[in-house]
Length: 185
Image (cartoon, rainbow, N blue to C red; front, side, top):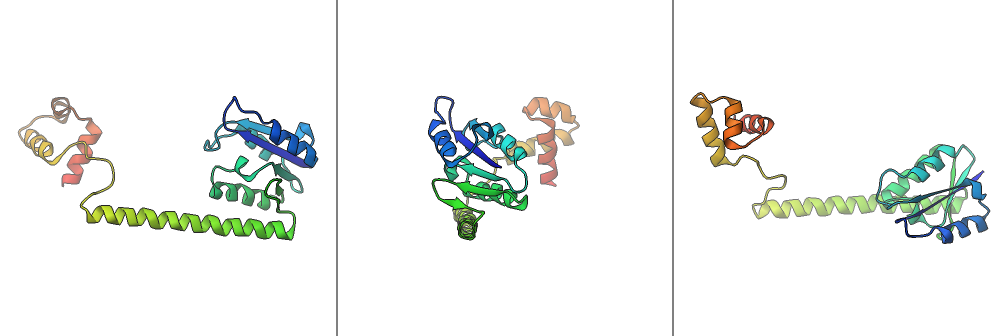
């Protein structure tokens, strides 16, 4: 069975162009699933229903690759899942068909590109962090209790003030206080 999936990013956009292409390709209109939601969203009901409906030997057809995945890595993940279940994948615009040897090669090239992209991103992030560290900048969330305030809190606690009173007096949450005290040890 051939199942189609189409997606547009907003409610005011139409899926008609994609639907026409899927119907022309031979997808039965009863087997077309759609979403009107940004591709960056993790949960897409239409895609979930299409993936649940598909069985071994079926084929998922999309008008264009970017209608299916949020990113190249996400797209590769979906297509790998389909492949593991014995389900073919076709993208009409790009001419990708994983049910053929050339389509399978095309998919593997995409997979290699996705891995290359991930490696480049990791390198850039590491280089950026190293550069920031060299300039004396430390990443992460700023501390809620600075060193000066921590010294005053420790003094108040050693003078017998309760943790609850310290929290009220210095305007900090109990969990923040505990974390700061544990780091200071």
